[in-house]
Amino acid sequence: MTAFQSVQRSLARSATSLGRPLAVFLKDAGHGLLEVCHNSLALVGLAVVALSMFFATRADLRHSLEERALDWLQSRQEARVEVDPSSGAALAVALGDRDAVGRATAVDPRDLDRQQAAVASWLARRYRVAPEPVSRLVQEAWQVGQRARLDPTLILAIMAIESSFNPFAQSPVGAQGLMQVMTRIHDDKYEAFGGTHAAFDPVTNLRVGVQVLKECIARAGSLEGGLRYYVGAANLPDDGGYAAKVLAEQSYLRSVASGRNVAVTAPLIVTPSVVPAAGGAAPEAAPPAAEGQPTATVAQTIALR
Picture 1 (cartoon, one colour):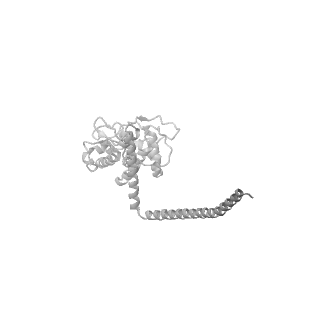
Picture 2 (cartoon, rainbow, N blue to C red):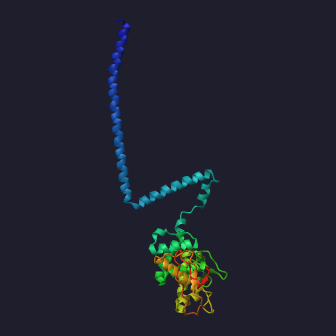
Picture 3 (spheres, helix red, strand yellow):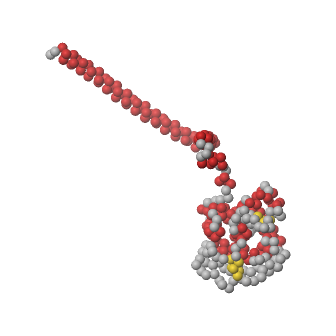
């Protein structure tokens, strides 16, 4: 055996003797690292669970953290917008208003009971308006009508005839809003709502309109006479069919609320007669036409205002 071969074998034996401890070391180190990671993840999980349980019992702290997080996100968004002020996001931030949804006169129709939901859906289709704001008005009409001891379908019928559910409607003589209240005459009723500009708030106009209607009915002593007062025709020989139109529309709404199928295109039909003086009996409205059935021909069709 040559000296060179002897050296090679010595080096091989040395490498083998060194490799075994090194492999053992690396194996032990790997197991230790896995154990540490496993324990660390377990500690993190326990910490998350503990914090979650803590914040679940402390609504004030949770709310504070949510506000801080929202502010941080908002500041980040604003910082991004400042980089490109011409972007659409810049306009959205400039015009944004977190309270806009809270001010909107709208509710989900699914939050209404069966009667109210049916009426809201029918009115939305008949007057081609969104169901959410109409649902809010239907809900308010039921609540205010109960307090004022007035049929909510009567309140809704007046809104339908007066403005077709346009909250910004105004007549040539100055009647404004959903129920076409004469704002300059009933300005005192708007004081509790902050002033006469509240006439264009749908809910406020409804509430004030109900006050005026209640006074008119009390003064006239009857519903028909009260409607003549409401439209300003108490001292006139004819109210132009106003009371008949309101009562006809109310008859449709009552039928819808009771579950009957009423066509959204059903016209306002009343028997041909002269409207009596205040306090007398108004002409009876014809029964509402069901879907698909022809309307009566021996009647006077009054156009919707």
